[in-house]
Length: 401
Image 1 (cartoon, rainbow, N blue to C red):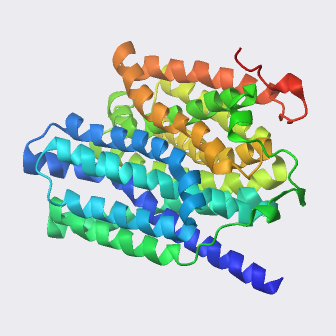
Image 2: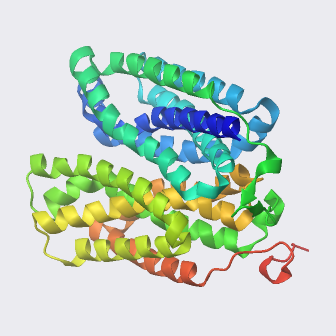
Image 3: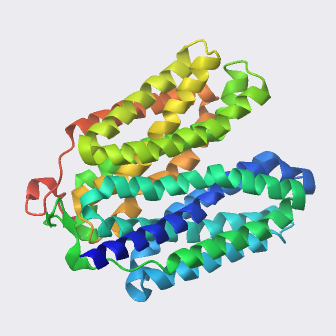
């Protein structure tokens, strides 16, 4: 028993190292201006890179299960780490936007998604009695990375230049993932339990797709991701345009959002084991609803602005941590990476649609109202949703004839 406990802790360590390396990509905003200064590209064109990355990351999660089944988690994570690192290293040589979109957007995005989903799902299977805490630690490491690498990449850009920074960054990430992968081990299916009992709700991928709960959870996850990702992308602009803050003061919100985002992952993830995951998602969505309404209707000052964006960031971090465990609770962990991979497409969709809605509706405030309406719908969904059971035919959508 002691040996198994020690093995699990090493697997957790390897997962945290891998997740930490993966999360470094969320320092991307640091590169927009330096790349624009060097190549003369529009910042808006460079910013598209992160949208492509987010969408590719979500798509990459769909490939995790088959790759792990064929090669095993240690080998796949090592290979993906090499691909991701090489993608960053190659970016040091790009001189066109198309190449930037290919290296960071597609290569780094897809490899990041594969490693993120595979290592997270696998680690949750090793710790069935502490799923919320483990999810918080793993996804928290992903979020913490953006804070640490903000200083690492910032210092490299200042001392080495923007292109050479990609070279050093790629080497660091490659080494971290290769080391972390050596501690990983595939979770034995026979040991997967839920609440200390053998899982009785392991849905196959086809059974999962035939439940109404899968689509309802997708709507809620999409709402949580769009609210958080949209705000993270424009947090400085909100401060300047709506709260009348100076660009220097508003820029402080970028670091604050990263801190509260990570705090939400750690705190709400751990609390979900004790207070209930559905209740905490409803709480997080309710706080997000209040925050976006304040941003939309209140006369913003320094305090209201920072409190509102901190609240959205905290709740986004919490929701993205709790959701993989909810999907496991609802549909079992045997096919978790496949099933959660579908739900996770709400992340990629949320990353793109937030900006699209802003362009179509005319700016921040109209987009905040769309988010508010989606929050209300999602709160109702989570307040009424029931866990599906394979033998309860009323919860399974009919097959197409």
